[in-house]
Image 1 (cartoon, protein in one colour):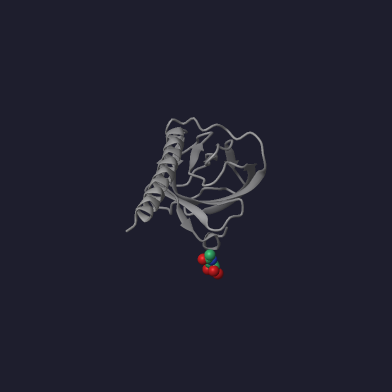
Image 2 (cartoon, rainbow, N blue to C red):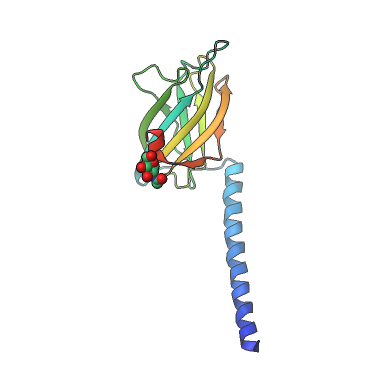
Length: 172
Ligand SMILES: *[C@@H]1O[C@H](CO)[C@@H](O)[C@H](O)[C@H]1NC(C)=O
């Protein structure tokens, strides 16, 4: 191999390392920002449509899994978080086995939407959530946040680690 070729390989290698390190530190910064909870509320820019479908766990005879509490959500995006939205319709929502869908518009939180914060306020009774499926800004695919979790008070819980799903399979 000539000296020139060796030098060229060296330059490419160093460039790739610099790119890798820059990307890694940007990701690090983002996750630190999230961990410390300093994501600020979005306050302007364009508004985008959001659709969320909520699955309440199937029933059993021992304890009702549905709730009469209001279910509220907050989207944590790549750039900022949304206000808290009340998921409500004229139906009796969040009964056992129900699959209810809601729509609203929010300032763009930035993609990916990393997590959804869920809280029952005002809290009336416990709820066993199964999952939430999110369609953000009419995008396909959708994100499914699966977590069978009992909500037993109004303390917010955060759904993380979504899987990518086909929106049409979830009526979105
Ligand atoms: C999503 O599912 C629908 C209905 O099953 C199917 O027609 C469509 O091709 C799927 N889209 C993708 C991107 O997989």
